[in-house]
Picture 1 (cartoon, rainbow, N blue to C red):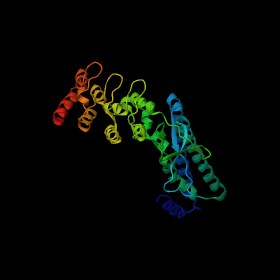
Picture 2: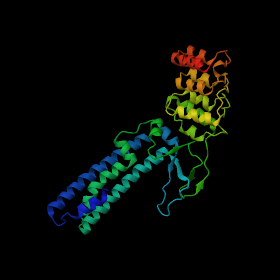
Picture 3: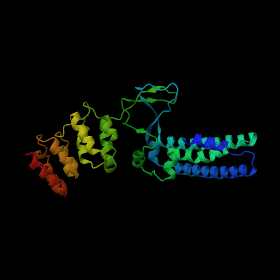
Length: 322
């Protein structure tokens, strides 16, 4: 939609008119100078970002380049390559510099040796558009990216996936295109990672891994389960995750080393939605009457922590389900 009109308009330019040639040269030079300065800024910001330790340690899976011919089969698995976030950011930034610099060299060579002015006109318009289409440049120039791992995970700039997120529908390939075995994070580690992230937790890795076989997996040292963690967190997507947990057969009545079931967790951590969901969707399980090792029921924990809103919801829900 952009290139075809540009080509038609560019061909109508009088390539023999000195004034038009001068105007095109000045326009092209100004635009390309601004572009190269913008790219230099992007590279500067990337080099500062990759100084963060987490970027060097964070393993990511980025979509592999799929050749247009032959087209992949409709049921083909989506292929990913493994790298570190710092390496991928740096590679992407310098690829932008090389492609832009190469385009400038080709355009100037054609103009100098062949007298072509069409390229000057087209690249004056297409250059900024190409920069805008570059996801990394757009994110940096418009200040869309932060410094923390959480902000980058939310951004999903390259449609990347992180450890534990690859599914059966994905395929890991190396630089030669050969299929590699996917190494999955143990479910226990995934549960702990979600809890450690707390309010900034991304539930997607956990939800994508859940199935009927692992839905009630417990951590060895503490006896935590997925439904305990999810019901106590107040993060985006927690209700969808709770619905999936129920459908897969999660058991909220299971207790951890302190004798807490999932409702104890929700009550203690002040999760109104989690507590209400557990009491309504798992009524009859005796969750609200279960006592922990200190003899406290979930309502005691809610009141003891000053979570009055949770206590009120629990009392109201309890009356409804009786």
